[in-house]
Image (tube, rainbow, N blue to C red):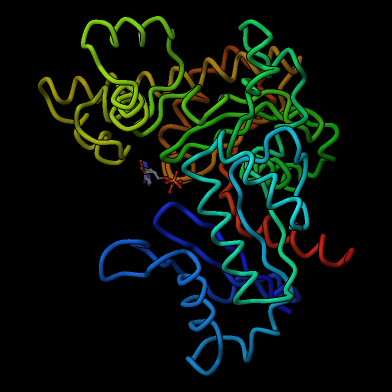
Length: 365
Ligand code: ADP
């Protein structure tokens, strides 16, 4: 029995095929450059390519599409409606469409992937697993901004949080590794990839997270600014007479590690250049300092929010591959947190969690 996991981006579709009985990924891959000249036409066509690659007649791992019992889709935004993963029905598709307004770059490609699967893999149940669901347990005091309340009512302006599948996966893994029930644990999970976010997970539930209405808020990221005073944006807008589209690009694509270092959005390049002398090295060191400082600040804030702390979990590209950063944070915090607090590195596996949720939901029928 196989579960197909699909992750549609604006110009790519990533997939993994899981053998449920053996709890193993049997095939994975990526269709890129969707919509570009000479490449795959659209997401539907990409699903067609994936299905052809997977079926035996093309040398793949399954005999026919009937071996696929369920399809799990990563969907970025489920608004306030989806508090957990859900079987995809026409009504669910309409809701995902509605939340495209909140995630215009992410939800539409997922919808194309869902529609492609409905046509090509007709009759196979599909499940949506949302990046936002895990954070739906946040209390109002954590998710509301200090804006006039009409904006929450009119437009749903609030903290939603993202990377939920990853935070949930590593927090469950942490409970397993620490041999303690999730209900008894106070954890801070740090997803440090190109996009970075942190979550306070108390008793297995997200009670606060650093990303907000969009994935721009919080930590310093590869190219996103993270936390800043909105008045600074208004000031720059006025001074440089920028368009809204331009300022959006600056905050999302030209800031963060890239903006501060002037070198790269990739932590590996920055760590390397920081070892040299001169102005570039100085800027790289500053970028690393801000990156680490914010993580420490959020750990302290979340420890206070949860009224305690048992472990800090690091995951994703930087978190999994850079023990130096993890060591430095734990060393810097040794006089702040109790000696019993564990600092753990746990590889994330969002696809596995999507496959598990999909299996559980289709099993229930
Ligand atoms: P994404 O958010 O795109 O899924 P990943 O979780 O794969 O990203 O993380 C990508 C980032 O991980 C890269 O930009 C790079 O900064 C960082 N990274 C990968 N390997 C290392 C390493 N050995 N040391 C430091 N950073 C690393």
